[in-house]
Image (tube, rainbow, N blue to C red; front, side, top):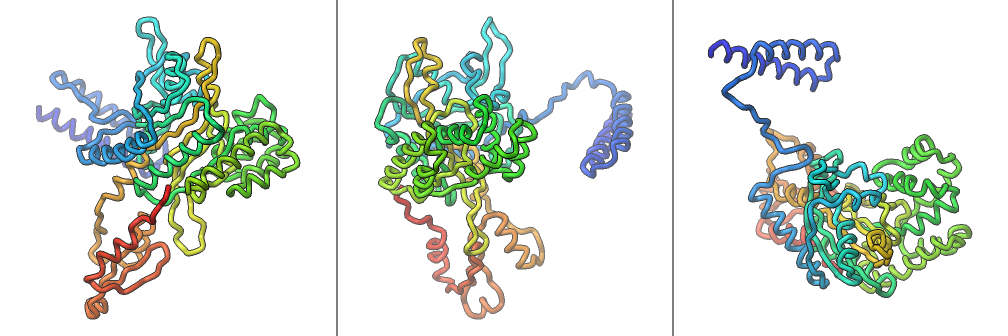
Length: 470
């Protein structure tokens, strides 16, 4: 037993050495040599017959939730569900897996991320990728032509997870959809209203909702000279503009997808534009775009949409953004995506988008794909990205200390900027002498002396969200 314990300790130490070399990015030869030593030690150790070893971890891209985390999730769900119900939605549920053929061909290039299951009893099945396609199947199967529904459930994507940013392989979606024939743009405006209501109620920071229309995109591609067969794949490239530069997107279009540089540049002239209803009116006068029937229909609908958004009091939260593409194949009209904005570090700077927290759009043709007679049911909906919201709320509830004996003020202020902490209370010798506390705004760097008895009220005043009528 003593000999085995010695060997186990040697295996542990050698394992640590290998991991250390990998972290230090040592040469492949050196790592290979040390791995060979580790394997040799393990071979000497042999199997431990009386003990079964388990790897204690959750699968990649998944996580457990503690009671405290579940309490946060329940509060977020309560806000979302109460808003859905306030707008008249009923709840449904569907199976966690669908027939593979139900999901095939609905997600464009993202179809490769669908989890396929082994054949069990003669049916080829896949885990659901989202809640929209199962909803369309549900409508067709039950011959429904009119419903306002919400659905909160887990979906699965064989994606590269980035769990610190709320990106998982198993995660919740919170969907709201309106199915049925209504006057143009009224259901679309209601979906955007709901999105604004929820994001404002959750108090996770300032946000902007980007809006576009797939018909405008398709019309733009047509007049720029993109072949019909490449519309969807070029759409996927354009959709990356919120993450990478135009030059990188152009290189992908030309180098990987076969467009000429001239066609790509023509696309670039359009997709780098964003604004409000004035941009819609400007493009309605565009000599080429306004002559394309699809693009013209999309622009006229967007103009009407902005009228409703103004009546709802949320037009200031909406930006018409020609780079928004939403890669999913089933979208047919208006598309939208909400992003959180990072407070500018210096006055006058543009706020930066720090990640999508909600998205959606119109998909009028999806139900018809499942209906035996091809009957269409117009649909529009939205999905709240709750995993990212959970991550933000959790981070904001963490109380932190800087573990240094004599931390420099500049380092502490830099940390506050990086962590998104809005206010800093500074108490030095002079403040103690004067009986005040210096309150510093991290974003504007403005400092003000506040009497101690007024500090709580001043902090509340500065951190309370502005009144939002959306």
